[in-house]
Length: 238
Image (cartoon, rainbow, N blue to C red; front, side):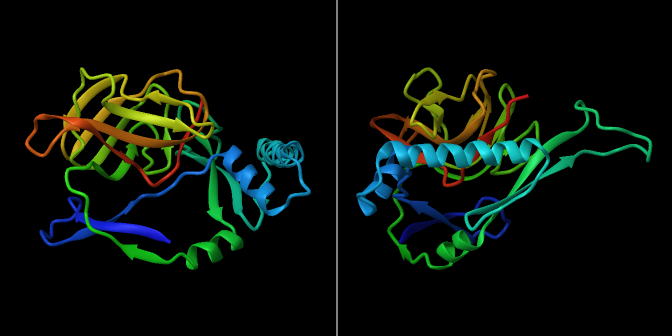
């Protein structure tokens, strides 16, 4: 079951428009998934499961590197090239073009998504919420982050104390490691954050979290208020 609350939608002109914000979403890393598989399959060891998953990941990456497409019940992946070519004689130029991998849900994930039940819960006041995350360099929304690039976050109650090390924008990797993503703060408003990302972000998938010690009155409060975005963001190394 997925729980949600309704928050004001600042992306439309209608004053009575609201959007659903998922809450209490638990994130599962690779080690937790392996433990869940072991619980249902006592005959399989942790080493066996990890080895199989690692081989699948390795082979999938090799296929993509070779320009192939992947079709599985979990996901479909296909490489593409973005950018404008000037005339039929033009060729790929990494300064103007970028290779991307497009991901779509496979049949199994589509069926799982259709089976999700929903539950509306009371809106938690004074907690940040995130509507969209835009990577300015690639122009993508809710998809990608570029190390050393600029990230724009829109939502509500986002403003944080820039001089407080516990406040800011953080990235949490698949292994649970986290790093502070707000290397430089360009704009720090309740509905809009613009930050410059560190240039040494390793390639991989991340969850983004905003943490602030500011309350509704704009004063510092004792308890840290956090919100994790419900979309996975992929850091693409140059």
